Structure formats: C-alpha cells, structure tokens
Image 1 (cartoon, rainbow, N blue to C red):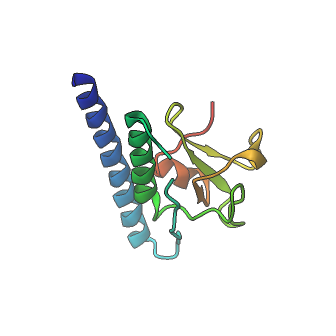
Image 2: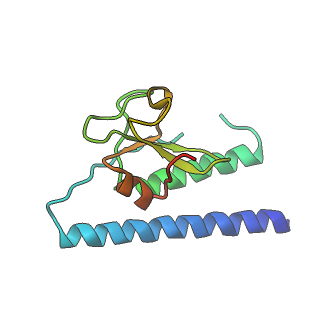
Image 3: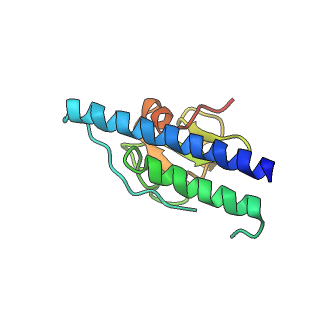
Amino acid sequence: MVKNLKNLLALRLKHQLLLLQLVLLLVQQAANPTSSTAASPVPGNTTSSSKKRASANKAAVLAAAQNLGVKPQNETTCPSDALVKGKITNNRGNIYHLPKTLDYEKVKPDICFKDPATAQLAGFRAPK
C-alpha cells in the first residue's frame, strides 16, 4: 500500500512538472508568437497493474507534451520538420533520439519534436 502511494505521488509530481514545463513554453510562445509547434500525439495491451500504470503514464506524458510535439508519420518516421524521436519507456524514462543517434532508424517514436530543447521541455532526455 505504501509502495503504491509512493508510486502515485511520484507519478503525480512528474505530471505536475510536465504541466509546469508546458505552461512555461506557452508563456514563451506568447512572448514570441513567431515560433510554432504542432500537436497530435498518439497514445499507446496490458494486463498487469504495472502495465496499466505504464499505459496511463504514456497517455499522461503524451497529453502534457501534445503542444510541444507532433504525431509520427508512420511506425519509425517523424516529419521532416520534427526529426527528434521521443520514446516513452517505463524502465529508462522518456528518451529522445537525434538522427545521428545509434539505431535512430529503428526507433519507433511515440511523439516527434522539432529540436532537443523542445523534447527536454516535454520531459524527455538524451539516451545514455
């Protein structure tokens, strides 16, 4: 019970951070209306409670990041104006991949970003 409560609190904190980052981006865009970002992410068959939490986390991350990124064109391709691939993972966190990254072509993105800074603002990090 305590572990579940800790997990829920950690997840809530992460979501609040993403929402704060989104608000900051919107404030920046209001100050500089020439910048633009598109939206339309894709939410992600689960049976266990951890898989359900993971699916809920993925949906929450995508919802928070929808104004920062765009929907992939197909399973492994991002639009030409948003080549940074965002992958939501449970074990390693949310990771972004640049075109020069090893195995970039094989990565199946959940969301695409125009640059690494936007991916970071959405809560993604570079691979280790």
